[in-house]
Each structure stands twice: as structure tokens, then as C-alpha cells.
Length: 408
Image 1 (spheres, rainbow, N blue to C red):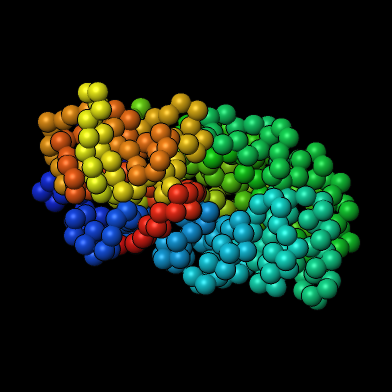
Image 2 (image 1 turned 45 degrees about the horizontal axis):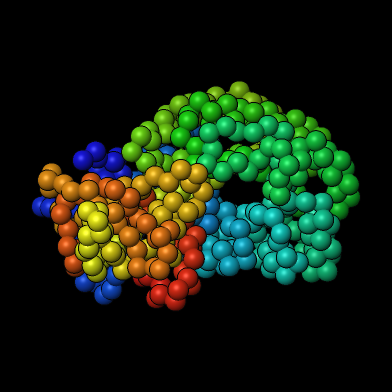
């Protein structure tokens, strides 16, 4: 059985996988039911510490709450990172309730309603403006409330980043304002009563190629420096995006973070600090902080053979972990790393398919995977479940109960 690098992050006591130092069978008793998500706080802290050790000291870390908005996870991270990025009023509330100061919360995303913008202005968070219409509404809301909105401008760059799981910049986009239209919009806003901080660019997500990321960071910095030259306000904030990927599949190689850190250090020293000495520079990360620290745990409720093929039927499925089923952005379905929690050291394997409890052939967590022989009552673990798991899945589909989440 080929070992996935994420499996090595978790302890194994005897044959039993442990999360947060607790053997999983015991944690399941503590939780009280399956399926459930478990997130290891020590792995999250270790990932942040690793980033701090590799990235230059002047880089601020912002947690993209969309990756995992569980309140306990967000609260844990508020003590470790410098800021939070949110994409809805509910995520904003979660970040503020967790103790992140409003001045360290940025609100991005297209289609913000006027009600959300009013809440954000009143809260004092930084609003990443995504369109001229949104900018005009912010000016109006600020005048109505008697509060200067804290704003930045999200830029849609004039280049694309290859190798990203999702491209969110370059070409026509619902995200941000086209780079060529930014100078004109800045001139239009020059007389407005706005607390303008700077710029935000996010070109793509889930990238494992350090050379591509380094090239994109250099292009981002060059673009933002050009735009800063036409800005009527001093630039005090640069969000360079993120897109750092994690290895989901067998042939994936972990991102070479040292190369990214070296490039960022050079960009800070040679480009940003000489030209924009007041700017706070942020990297926005979600799955890279939490993705590998989480597991999805589900219990086998049936074992059956159909025309020679073995099926392990579990009490979870795609309604909780859509991405692992292959129905969340995969073009060609590949298996997430998966294991039997009580047989981590066994080498005698059989080929099985792990399927969920939903009445659809799409509910597939492991297709023809090699696992130790398992039966009814055994726990199956899907790794890489710390980001875009529960809240990115159709939990209401077929009316099954929602799973528990626990941070240990």
C-alpha cells in the first residue's frame, strides 16, 4: 500500500490512528456518533509555525475562513495568524466573535448585498471592492451611516496562473475589477469619503507548482506597484492572494514552500519595501492551513459482494464530503487517501470500493482501493478533510443527519 504524506502527520498507537493524541475509536465514543469530522489543533499550529519559519518576517498570514468556518477552528487560528479573510456576513460574524479585531478582517467576494455592505461598514472591517457598482454603494452607505468605509480594491489581473485547481483571475471574471479599468475607477473615487487602504489580487487556488506560484507572485507585485503609482491615496495594504496547494492524490508532490518563501523575501526587499514602505503585505491561505489537519470518520454498516466486487457501505458519504466523492471540481475522479482506522499497520490488503449511504452511484468515497480487510463496525477515515468538507457539501441531500465536528 502506497503511503500518502498526510497519513504520516497523524500518530498511530499500535494499529490505531490517533487524532489530537486520542485513538480514533476512543474519540468516536467521545463524539457519540458517526460520521464526524475531527480536526487536530496541533497540526494546524505546526503548519502556521512552519509558514512563519519559511516566509519572510514582513509577510502577514490571513486565514481564508471559507476553507473551514467551524467556530472553534477559527477561534484557534485567531491566536496564530494576523488576519482573517471572509466571504459573507456570517463568516464576518464568526471571525469577529472569535476575537479577530475588525481592522484585521477583510471581506471579499462578488455579489455582496447592500445589507452585507452596511454590516461590514458598521463593523469596521476592510471591504474588498469587486465592481464599480459596489464601490458606489459603499460611498452611499458610508454617507448614510456617517462612517468612512475601510476599503481595498480587488484586481482582476491581465494574466492567468497555470496549474491552479480553480482559476480566479485573468480573462473575464466575476471576481475583482479588470486591471486596465482600475486607474479610471480610482480617479472617480478620489473625491469620495473612503478610507482607502490598497489592493487585493487572488489569481487561483490549489497550486502545487512552486515555480508557477513564484512567477505569479512576481507578476502580482509588478501589477500592484503599477496601479499604486496611479492611486490618489498612500497604499497601506497589499493582499497578494495565496493558492498554496496540498497533496490530495497519490502522485501529488507537496509544495516546495522554501522556494516560495525565497521569492517573497526578494520581492519584499527589492520591490515592495522601496516603493511602498507603509504597506502591510498579506498572504491569504485557507486549505494550506487546515486541509491536512482534518479527517472525515465514517463507520461501515454493511459489507457486500456484487459479482465479485467488494463493497464497504458506510454511514457517511458525499452529502458530508463532496470533494472526496470526486464531484467537487475533479474532471477525472481520483481517490482521496483513505484508511481503516484500526488497521493502520496491516500489510495484507484487499481491493474494495467504499460507498456511502445515499441512493446514488455518485456516492463513492473510495473506488477500487487497497485496504486491510474490514467489516461492519470498523471506522473508515478519509484524509485531507480539514478544508472544503462539511460546508462545501450538500448536507440536506436525502435528509440524513448532519455530522458532528470536533477540534482536538
